[in-house]
Length: 395
Ligand code: SAH
Image (cartoon, rainbow, N blue to C red; front, side, top):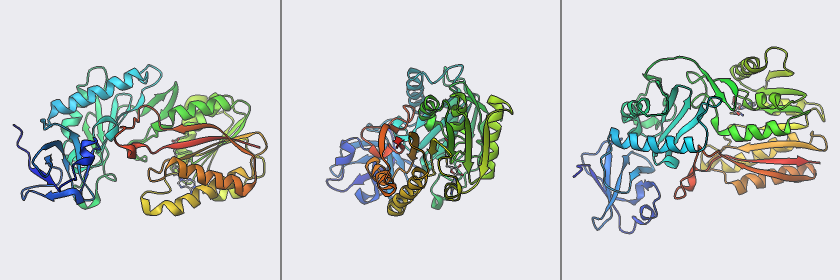
């Protein structure tokens, strides 16, 4: 028998766990044992004592992130088995190939490992903990990662300085847990990309736009492309490969602009029809001449980082999209995204509708986009859906 601290729920509060939702909110808890520490693995029981499974305990609104509906041992074998399942899915998706070695191996609840993100770039895994429990398990997880048959992982970089609950005072240091820096060049659909996991945002690169970048490539031939919020220039290199007449990349961060230039040079040398600008999006869109671009990508950072920010975020999306639409020539194409988890696809679409109505343009939806399959959504955890996008035809 496993000997975990036991958390008992209030009467009737077991319902969501019975529907396999992976979180226990603090308000559902009747009794906490005295000897409980943040990050502990705990057993959860219904008020009548029925076991409901095991999870990681933390202090906050989400009190337990469930790891299994049975009371099982959470050890290296557990992590190895979940990681094996995660890898099997990525193999089935065809993401691990000579010309593609950048993918998300673990998408938290979507891979039944709540609180854990693992992105892979070649032989390096970048591990990100969002819960104290995963923070304490980091060495065990790292060992399981480098032992995973078929994954070819040698190095594990831990990057949780900004993702763990601030109040937990865990003082996570960003560093290699196993191995060391080898190369930072990842390959996505045959395109080479410098990934800066040491200093870059999130795990260093946004693998979640892979499929959408491929779609952009299909539309790029002969077009004048604006890649707004370019970060590492992912969309820019696909547009160039697709035969764009010119590509302009914009980001307010000078480092992002430098990274984009590097990535263009890495794939196309110095002669590609590409320029990058370190400028604020609203300023750039305000100053750009009418009709300058007939293919525009708007992929801003999350405008709403929490529920309280939704109203302002929706106004932000409306304004941004209206600024772009009003200057796009007839017959042009707009790729527009929101990665705010707190905003639903209906709300985002309404914001884009308002932008269209404000400019009076004829706008048709060509594609409705979402996150790729290596960011799976656990059907019992709809909160796992965050990326949404629209490809619009503007007349
Ligand atoms: N499209 C990128 C990801 C974008 S992440 C990709 O495919 O990888 C969001 C980017 O927006 C960041 O690089 C950030 O530096 C930039 N950014 C944030 N605020 C901005 C602003 N006001 N104007 C321009 N860029 C901004």
